Amino acid sequence: MPRISPIAVLLCLAPPLSAQMHKVAPPEKVTRAVAVYEWTGDLAKPTAARLVPVSLFINGHMEDAGVYLAQPMPFALQTGDIYSIEQAGLAQGTFDLDYSRNIITRHSLGDDDPLGAWYGYGVYAPLPPPSAAKPLKASAHISPIDGGSADDSDPNPHFKGRQPGQPSVDDSKPAAATPATTTPSAPDDPDRPHLNRRADTTTPAASTGTVPEDDPDRPTLRHRDPAPEGKQKKQKPSDSGVIPMATSLNDDPNRPTMRRGKATVNAPAAELTTLPPDLHQVVAVSDAVDRDPHIFARVWSTPTEHTETLKQLQTLAQTRIAEYIKTWQLTPVAATPTGPTFAQTPTPKRTTHSKPAAPPPPSPPALATEQLNAYTLSYGGLPTFVYSAQSPITIGGPVYITLVAQRLPSGELQISLSSITDAAHLDRTPWLRFIDTVDPDASHRADLLFELRAQTSRQFALYRLVTAHAEQQFVTGIIE
Image (tube, rainbow, N blue to C red; front, side, top):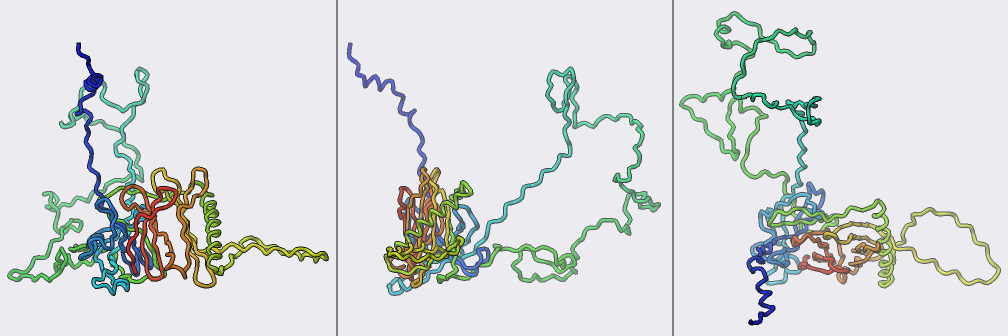
């Protein structure tokens, strides 16, 4: 008897290959643009505004939205594009892009083919308020509920229905006439509504069933006045969809009219080309597909969590600012004490020789323009906090500091990103100005969007927290 190989036995017992095959869906092609909407004044009615393109996720990788296919205009600034104005993933309004403009800067003025900086201009419209739910109304026909009887086997109440053996009633056929029964009339209720009949008249119209022409209560329909024969009216040129007619009906000032074209809710704001001090910034996202919103803002778990986290980050910031001021030999502005002050009693002079008293420790640097935001950047991710502040100094402008920290399961704060500079050294280290969180590639994971502002130029960068330290994923070109 020939010997059978164990491999052959396993191949025979294995299921057919066709049963293990499954359909593999092709990877989703994401085309998503991220921009920064900048304005001055009120967001609902800005005095000047613009859209600055930042990143474009297309074909599986990031592109600079300000220069990608910039002939004749960038791909992300095509006329008609709609951007969603968002805060931590929550939509606040829409920006309808009307046109874009290439602003030639000093950085590109000396080039043979200057590229400049592309800005988009259009109309911002806030989201409409949510529609109110329709109030519930009581039903006009309430089904009676039978509580059951003593001989009923089912003790639970049920709706009344046809008893077994009872013939069904056809609703399509008229019911047979039943002899009228005389019931005593109820006493006259003064609040009971009743109908009044019009007094009968003895005119022939009443006997024939027609309404007399001179009846003031007779309803009439208003007709358009007939035009005189042999005379045609000339229509006035107008862009309205409904042409009004010079009649008694159409002369009504409250009569609504329909107009063609696209109705604009808000007028476009003036073009913003400079960098004013009262500049406001918010994230704008444009996607080729309508996606469900993903909110990255984190709600504070306890009422005291915000206060405790702020104190911890303030201590870390003051320590780093003190070291920075000492390194660059700057003169800080002392912090104003906030606690109660007590009168000090004079110390009596000692006759014995004693060592000179040690100088008091320097007061911590003052903090101003503080901002603290909490986020959850991914599903099940660690709580992430972004803290920024300014510390005034006597010469050279303030010191800017930005800290990104995460709360570990042990309760400690882990610094993932730290940036510190001052107004006199922005060309060496730019000011890391936090804008907001954004999902640039529709991966349900948010990145931190910063503006890197120098003395006369700026850039935009995306940072991602995958490990303990934030890594720069993308940075735009220089914008002057």
